[in-house]
Image 1: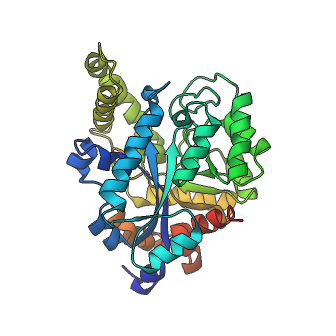
Image 2 (image 1 turned 90 degrees about the horizontal axis):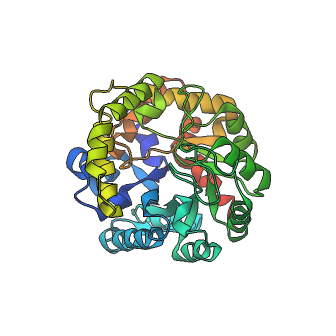
Length: 365
């Protein structure tokens, strides 16, 4: 590390990880192959201070098993992580600062996939009372009220219920996360929401032209409303040629996948098979280093301004990483890389976590 003093004073705050699912299912391929991107030793080594823990529920649990799965994930995270003192659940920036001052990891909670609330505004409010402070509107499939970037349009963005959910999220102070949402859904949200929004783990479409990434026009609109964009670390979202390799592998292993799921209707088994499938689609793909990630940080900062961009690693939710950013212990390497690419100390502070912290402060009364 070129500047150890800066590393010690940095507020490293990441907008998205799927570690809750890894903790829940210790048979996960993420545990076996990657040995978990987040653990206490790696967190300490990398200087991570705060993390948004997403509770990802596969859309295959819809229409009526998503709430139960999310609650089981929450219970597992509480028993295996919070109750052991490995991290502290926080619901305000005041809590966050207090937790960090005690040398503990500050942990925010998020729902990944609007299908989790099963079309119920009351369930949304229930999760808020449990301590969840953000929710992605969709995942890879459309919900009954919002279109996903990974599915064919069903509602042309948000339908009536979707608009009501957006207004309720504004009312209770729950952050709207548009990662995974379709462009039209994002535009509808921007039209309706009175509060800033975030894309917790999405990269730049201008550099990697896939629907999962954010277009320049949306980056500008999100930034103008004082929103936040966390850059995803997955190589397939950073380089178009690697995304093409992923798609090629998906075709290669499609027969294997179809044979595996044949006759299965248990969502737990189907989810496990899907995770194994994801590990296969990155086999033999080209490698990238952290400069591919920094390219996206630079582009988003140039388009939307330095105050809108930060980290959205998707650690423990991605089947491969840049070669020199293999887990949270590598954040000092990223800081060095930002220095090498011409960023100043104050800009690095913003990118590594201050922007995300300031974004959360905007939701406090």
